[in-house]
Image 1 (cartoon, rainbow, N blue to C red):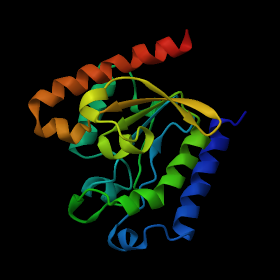
Image 2: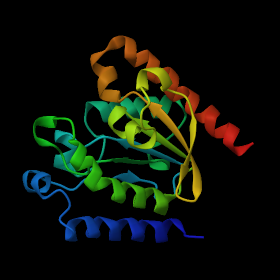
Image 3: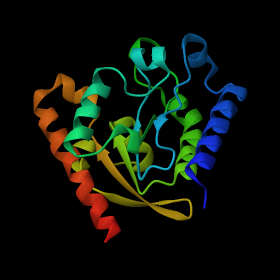
Image 4: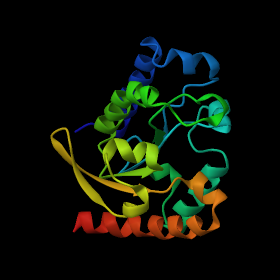
Length: 196
């Protein structure tokens, strides 16, 4: 069984592999930092967003801007601590002008996200927004399945995926904000059921 330290060493090696393999060179050339993810390398919950924004690119950490503040608020409301979870994105470099990540960019980074999940071995993956959701739950519409736990085959393992709206979307849409909070607060109950 890999320890938390072993997992962190593996995640650090993976970061170096991304750099060595020159993944998404066009994005890398205009980015300040590679944003691999942050948090507990032995977390039960991994949050997966779409791509870093301006603040994330500057600091080299995921979800540190306005959407990250909202994410922290929701974690606190659900009695979770940011230090207990792991937070990452599919695409690890900021797209120019915060545009949506392109399909080929997501495809190029996808194997590295999968490797992160294989290292961490979370009980639950929470996708934040449709870009990350569509990779785990292809063909689904976030408006129809947000907040619902879905069990998927992940390599040889089964994985629980809970799609949520992206915190940034909720910042611009007041109605969506409460939906996201309600969905978020159901996550501890989902995990409790897994442990029964």
